[in-house]
Length: 212
Image (tube, rainbow, N blue to C red; front, top):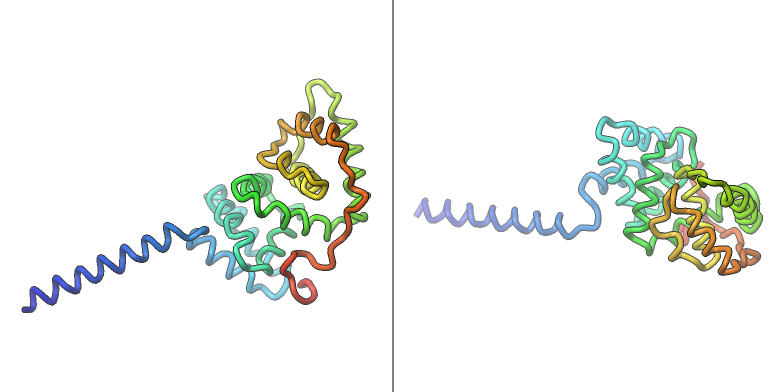
């Protein structure tokens, strides 16, 4: 009888392990990403969240940590989303993290409007003027031979501008080197950014004032 009980208990453990494994497999983010998102999103101020993000972004296994961070973006924690998006514009942010975030927008294109929303909210100039400045800047670079590579920060700016002007397909898998062709296609589409306006909040699902 004891052996039967042990066999039943062991079978139960196996079933539980399989259930947990299946749950983890089908989750959109890893456990590490979920924990990071909770830990960073719980910070009361950006300065505290910034320290946590910097810890991930400067870790020895930075690429894996950066992927964990960006895979948690847009999965239901607006505060975490705000902190990470803001950090992307900080001088301390690595190009590796910006690259990882840009690639995440390619793998999950439904997030591109969310990024564009935040970008339009935080621009120093009015969004339409910001897009016009970006357009003029790239128009001056495009004729150069060979073309100058963009930084990943500039790539993220252009991705937001393309989404805002109705050309999200040109923003997907945009890179520092393939931008001239995308830019020419953007010019040919005669984009109208005059209607670009600054949103009331940093994210579509944001409630209340943004953290300090």
